[in-house]
Image 1 (cartoon, helix red, strand yellow):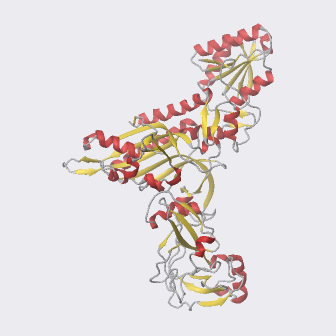
Image 2 (cartoon, helix red, strand yellow):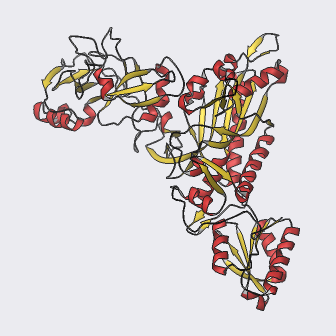
Length: 603
């Protein structure tokens, strides 16, 4: 078809929108693909919808290729299924909740595990019905506290979510592998470089989980990779744990006066003055010799505020995202939580913790942290805190620290948690070399859910022996609107968008530049012939718009091929330009259509 700019619902902008931070947001608005309706909520305009639908079609084709079938659920859902899985509470403030005129509770779905599970339960009852994979492409809603970056983190977004249903774990493995392969094919066809990385399941639950990350500096996810092929989101990285140390001959711990040393830096300086070490004993004290005890406040989905203390080497910062991803194993309630450093009000309720001098063990008055019988606070430690390691740490007395406090002898802990920052140069857990860190945008996420939702909603089938078994499930998501934004991030220059042919809103952008009926008649004729050849055409037929504005808009819109009909017509030629490379060539009018067709079809 031919889209005429004189009629197309489009207004391009010369200036970036004031609220735009990243290139994709700026250019998609300026080029008239989307418009902001509210924070984190966008209206799709005709050209934007064209790109979006092409992304959706690629997703649909690859889902069909693995035998998945499409369904479509409502976005407005009743409370009851989410109560059954406890996610009405677990989602916390991220859920859009509302009531109808009769007072019944509803939500705008952030994801649809419950509805897929109940649909299969309603229709299927035998192992002969399985395996099954079904999917939808549907709007999702999450009440982001700080929506940002345009389509990359919004309150309303479009996602493809699919679910597999199998009788046993072997079937789940096969379904998971099929979806993983389909995702790699989707992103390959979109022309997006993505890296599958090991991930944590988080609030979704289940066992195996992988994210598909698009590497970019503006990404909100940090991941690591090694030269030997290890890839993981930082939340999923595991520490190389040192071996236990024999402490049978370790000297007794000693409490020393260390006034005015509430920070690791001041403590290290004091340690080197008060108790200098020889080279044989390890040399000068460093932050790595200290045990920093970080007090965190965890707000559970129920609203309860729970205090947790984490002991980490003093040279490591606590990464709250890693804590959030891993602390669920130690909490009484699963689900989305809020995590922050404990505030002054929290600490006032814990007078036995002396700010700046907190430490495990050696409390003579009251068991606080890491002592047998202690029940006041949950005390977790970094994996590097192994039995026999000796530390300099707080003595729970103002102005005092303990030197030579031995883990496993002088204090214990309630659990081990991956909680500290992952650094470039850390060893990969699989021994494949030092880690490098990078940032990326999450484009897709796949989970082996197992039986969590099937058990909660009683999804069972009869097996070959006539016995009821709980179905095992997988969950697989692709961010469709996010893919459009990522494509814009990956495909632009200082003049505008540069779409890959697979998703471009048109195959060729015809521009009539100059005055005179012959120019417009030729441009009209070429547009019609290109359409007859099976191509989608944008034709800038605006009669009173300057060549500079027309060329500026053509480059801003980002169609892969630009065909300009102008002054060269007197010599019987038109200019055909490749938007990505910038290469331009004069081609005779009678050969222009074939030239463009061959370019579009890669010949």
